[in-house]
Image (cartoon, rainbow, N blue to C red; front, side):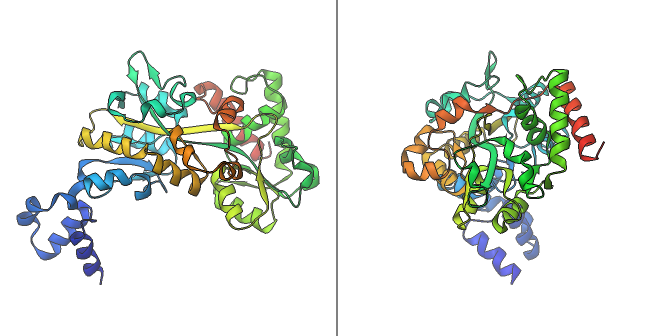
Length: 372
């Protein structure tokens, strides 16, 4: 049965080179037939795209498939540090999909090269708030193509905590009334920076000693109020759905799924500020694949129809402004992205931390979690 499925994928042009080689090996024909394979069966070999787990789906690049016959090869990673480490160690894809907060490290390590934006059809339609962010373009060229963006904020049960309806604040995650029913992301960015905001720090990336001490005290208080620290967002969604947790730090896609399941939740735009992140594409220096295929993938991912799919199914924003023209305003309001420019204007973009600051924040956060 497995062999039949494998040969069916080859016949339909949906098999990867690895699958084709395996099938030919089973038939004893690999060395003879491989050079004669139809192009569609080998289209993935033109390009290797290193992306986040869960983003390796055809819906994000239908235009590429229409032109090349199949998706590119798409190895995946689980977080930015893993991706950066793997490429530093010698793995060489053609394109990668890190988040903006690590862009400087990719560039400084000599791993990437600039894009030729004249070959990117939708470049002029990318939100200027994203493409004009520091580091995307330097005197040496454009290093980054923004693709998706979203927020980090609080999801809460509107039926259980109605006093927060219209009163959006990160302070809900310190509300003693809900002790044992709160959850926080187990991350420096997700915990220390939020505590800095609540402590009133003027610059959460460079807190004064007094502000740092205040943030630490808040984290110690929060530790005793939490149901759990989370590393898997699905755990939060299940807990919020059941009512075990009434408020938690999360990303936009959790709210989309909870609302689809009929759970009465809202996504906050906290008065202290909502965090905004964005991720995108980098071009690996001297990538081994077809450079024309690389630009085909970039252009396919920037199409408005792809943005429509991303917004409706993930609740994330697309970098192409034209994607938003296809979605009814009420749907955008439901997803809490009705006015992207307002979010960009009031949001706090996650930024790269100086190494010494990050190490200081990590050390403090680990001590707090350990009860020290």
